[in-house]
Length: 510
Image 1 (cartoon, helix red, strand yellow):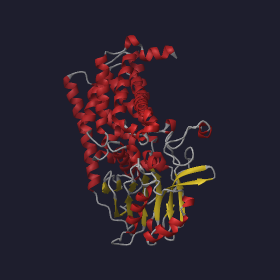
Image 2: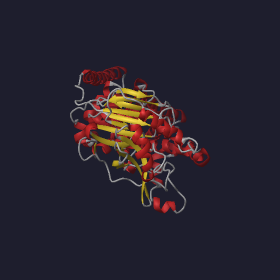
Image 3: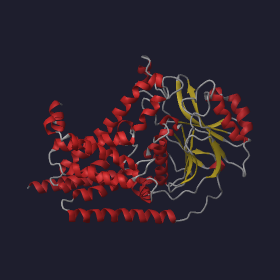
Image 4: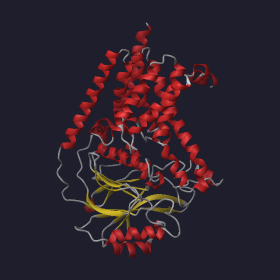
């Protein structure tokens, strides 16, 4: 192991501090393409710079240092909001916040070592640049699956909100990452001013093609859903620091009830409350559901986030309450947040007082049985997601059959007010494009939104606002290629490119 680390990060082979700082700064600038900034031109230019730094370095260890530094800068720049959950109860968890940021940046840096290592397949600047690009997409693919997955702030996410995002219907998020990395690699592969200008022109032409194609798709009109599905989305602005306080939980509950009881211009098919909206367990909610809620809803079904128990097990759930106040469908979240909603080996850890800080009951939540589609009659067939589950494209594809629309209830109060909630919203937009399905999301503190099947936000309530609105569920599109195949084509393409790089390396060695 020591020999391996010495080879990867040999002290004598470490680049000058100025070059490492430049690589880290370039990585941080790539992060500016993520929400809420969306500065994709800055991100693309910074990725060209970082790829050039890596590709020009012929020695293995210095190149690994540069890739590691770029990943650390990217991780810190894109995921600095990770400290926010630890500051909800700073007297208990605040001391962990700096460690969380450092570990997150270091973890991203480790993933970006893979592209730097794959660049070693090339013997020239051009092939090293292409290798680094392929490695970036491969690391994004791996990050979505290993260690339960964390596909947040992928390189290709810089295109969310632009016409280029429409390519995700065929290529998915990893395809967007590969496209982005290759557009940066072309100029970085060139060694002369003339070649760099030509390569930059090819990259811009590629961008123009995807931008133009996406624009044409966005301009196409779709017939409205017939019959229409009318839904009310309620956002109580329940700040996470106050949400469970004895003097505040009833305030937030009253806001939900008042919004639910407000008159509607047209009949509603469903009313939606956010994640963990009820301040008590589902099995303890009978009198409230059959009394206050049933009266306020006036016979309209209500879908609400709620915690529930089954013996010693606790679940983060979505319950559908019918017009009489009875639960008629329950979905239990099955892709839980490690350490936030559950602790690995949690039964053993609980004996030592180690618990998941997002769970209000027990030592942590138990995972549900898996994805499901709920038939809500006039409201259509719904694929429910709870918070973090919208980050995973594979979780939507795991549904046993195709839904009419996707419903996400979430508590983005954990993510602060700067970047985290907007990145979470952006991922929901991408999920809609990938599946060709509209997605409605309801949050405790925002952003509550109606997203059409092209990923456009049609209606929304901003972060930190109390309110509600009625909306029609947008129409669905035909099932997309990505919805049918997932990441398999992207994985096959990446393996093919890696094989081609290996082939060229062998040819160059003879």
